Image (cartoon, rainbow, N blue to C red; front, side, top):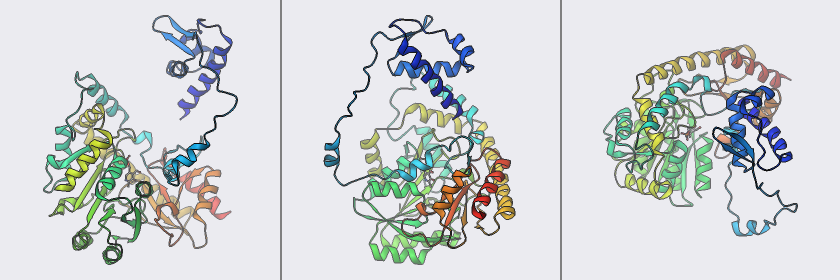
Length: 465
Ligand SMILES: Cc1ncc(COP(=O)(O)O)c(C=O)c1O
């Protein structure tokens, strides 16, 4: 983030210079820009790339950068009248507020105890760079991949999931979020109900609503979704699908108990419904997770989504959807229509990464770091915020903390941000009314354990003030 802001600052300064120059005039050399602005050569080249993309400079390899001959016209003084668009777009809207908030990095100096991805120091940056370089060197790297995904990658996902799954059941997709869009669109017509755990991942609520679906809450407790209420919700709504995270549920961290796994499948069977299993955090287990639900599925009831961004990096946007029977055909067709296929270099890079000897080493290092961070966070809570009821998750990135009655979680999260710590209010994770105020506090997103402790100290001073 620091790097991005120094690129932007240098681009601003050079932009002002270029506006004073004559067309064709040469900009100072990269070396003198490095010295004059005390920035790195990478910052200089990225700032020049910004100006080149704006059409303000032309770079000639070996000769330098020059003020462009014809500059882009300045924006018209009067803004265009775009009012007609409101009428043309009608009353439909897509609410991306929750997702935007989740994906926006915290301001400088704010401790991130929120977010969906590992802190960069926990991401496998070097193995990823090596995997990407190897993938990009292949002569056919930019050719079309096989439809459905690279066969070796499909085989890897099938083997990882286990059970009766075969590579033919796997379709490679562009990340977990895109998989959710594709699967929901493939399974359900607009206006249909979709049963979801309550609370649940706010991104699925956003996708479902944007697709015209109606999320219907089914409560979770310490053992996962409640089968008795699930049966009632199916009966009441006639829903044909449940979206579930049986393993390291976001936001609560719970794991669906062994007994309930069979019960959930049985309830879905009785309702003639699918179970969409979002297995987003399998590789982030502090304790070993149980096998996925799809491994005990006998009749093609489970549609499984396996994403790897959580264990790697947010931009490695490759995942898999695994399904059997006509639904698999529908999902494959939907994906083809929506996006053709995920970029081949990314598929190749993921395959390189997971088949390298460094992959198991990376996973065990991440799990050890997460264990230590979770414990550090819980210790800080016990010391500074004993009045919060906090769970002890066995995997993923977050703890789920119940606030004392009467505390407004949204106002608290806003005040915490002003005090220099970013946490997630619980309310957006509930499809309907929240039964109590909660915070989701992430231990995988901070830079270090001392930073976690400092974040809790800041939160405590806000709550106690
Ligand atoms: C439960 C859950 N599913 C899916 C996703 C989507 O992740 P990605 O698209 O990076 O795979 C997220 C991201 O936060 C998540 O928490």
